[in-house]
Image (cartoon, rainbow, N blue to C red; front, side, top):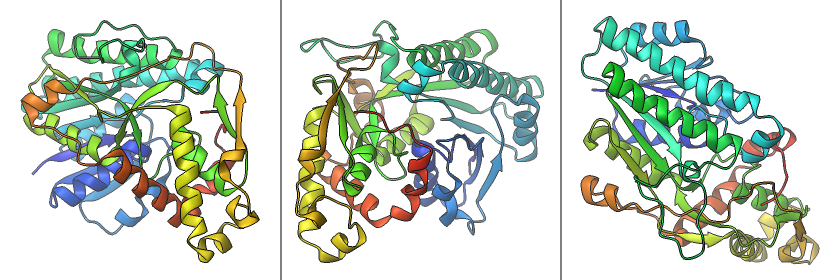
Amino acid sequence: MKKLLVTGGAGFIGANFVHYWLHTYPGDNVLVLDALTYAGNVASLDDLGANPDFQFVQGDITNQPLVEQLLRDHKIDTIVHFAAESHVDRSISGPDVFIETNIIGTHNLLKAARQVWIDEGMAPEHRFHHVSTDEVYGDLGPNDPAFCETTQYAPNSPYSASKAASDHLVRAYLHTFGLQVTTSNCSNNYGPYHFPEKLIPLIITNILNSQPLPIYGDGQQIRDWLYVDDHARGIDKVIRSGVVGETYNIGGINEWANIDIVNLLCAEVDKRLNESELLQQRFPNSPVAKGRRSIDLIKYVEDRRGHDRRYAINPDKANAELNYQPVETFETGIAKTIDWYLDNAQWWEPLRNTAQLKAA
């Protein structure tokens, strides 16, 4: 039986991971630590409140004494570290918090784990799993091979630079202090509980409110998309079967240009509303409810500063060493995602007031 501390467990990927783990491994204990900043939403965990294997603590990863106490009190043997500031636009307008959370916060977690697990000898067998991003590798040309684990780091935004720094700190605590660490770098995630300033939920919720669908530049930025439950499965395999000290890229093998995603979402949302009078009644401001088309909401805007052109993950190492393969196709994953947002307006509507609803 494992005892997990999941940092950032009220965020998008973290909350989905917590649901996945408790469903897959009943009897394991999961303690979530989350500061509940703008992207953390405890409502994403509401249905777990009666689960005796789940606990939630509101707190900051920069608070090293708090983390040490949680590790001791709950006899934690596994840290899964999601907590991070992750929105590129926010990192451009206000980079300081990215340095504080992603670098200082990760370092304080590492110090706490070293103190309790190694110096105090509480958990000789342990795992510190660090969740990173493909953005640390920079960007790719149209014909460049996908990022692999040995690709040179070349971050291009304050966000990706802060994540790259945290990756290096995790590696250093293995080689310097013997902390048993693993790292995974993932491609763009999508799915339920995604904060509505990110591309896919932004487009879905803007459609349902007949608001413009802003597209950066020409919309030809390409991303590799990974359904969030497939990411959870990949992390699970790294924690249980990954080699200490190794990095594993977890990707969806699913590259799409931003404008193509937006066009797909317009078509799929319109299709669902055209087939359902009930949905039109629930979303009376949607284009279909007004006899219009969602695609007409698309608006091209000035490109983001330093906007990376293409990301793509090569998951061959995880496939070969961990027998990892995504379960969802983009068609099945995007269908599940759209249906979730149509069914859970009570979750996302309050969040749109705090989101930076910019562009795709």
